Image 1: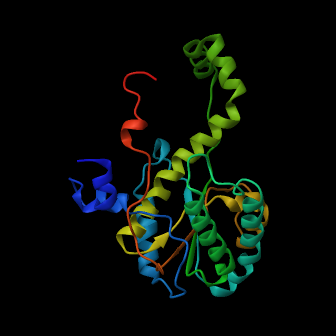
Image 2 (image 1 turned 90 degrees about the vertical axis):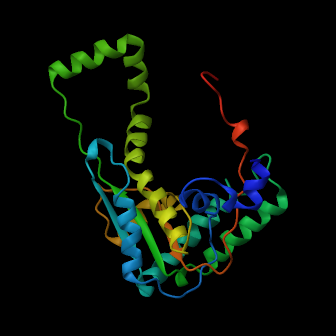
Image 3 (image 1 turned 180 degrees about the vertical axis):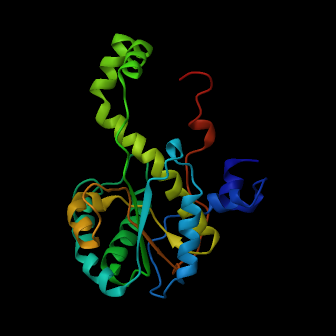
Length: 243
C-alpha cells in the first residue's frame, strides 16, 4: 500500500478503526456555535484520564469552559495571543509548506480568533508535578549511575527535563482527547498560545498559582468535513538502528 493510497482513501488502512480515525484527524478550527452535551465532554475527559501517567501519579486536572459569558471574557485574551503568534512565529509558511495551504490555515486561525466567543467548549489540561523526594543514598546512586559528565549535563538541562517530565504526564491524555473528539464527530485542535499570557488566563479561570497549564483545546461540531491529513512519508522519517 502506498502513502498516496492512504492519503486519498484512509479506509484502505489495515487494522482497527483507530487507524482511519488518526489518519483523518485534522486540526478543525471552524466550529458551529451549537452546544456540545456535557456527557459528550465527559467522554473526552474520560479518554484523557485513560492516558498514561508518569509514575501513575495522575496529578492532572481539567478546566472545562462551556459558559458563554466566561468564553466571552476569554475571547480578548485569545485574540491577543493569536495576534502575537501571527505577527511573529506564524508570520511565514514553514519550510516546505505550500504558501496557499499555509494561507488557508491562517484564514482558519483568524476565523477561530474572530469567533472565539462562540466556541462551544474549551478544555484546559493542567498538572501539578509533585516535589521530587531524595535521600542521601538515592542521590549517591544517582550521581554514580550518571557519572560526572552525565551529572553535569542533567544539572545544565534540569529545567528542560522538568518541563518534558510534566509534558509526558499530560500530552498523552491530550492526544486521547483529540482522538476521542474525532471518533465522536467533534472538531478540536491543540494550541499552546495561551502560554504567552498564562498568568492572565489562570486568573480569569481561577487556576491555582502552583498549577501548570499545558494547552487550550477548543471543541465543537465542525463546519467543514474531516479528511486525510497531509504528512511526511514514513520512509522519510525512520532512522533504523542509528541516525
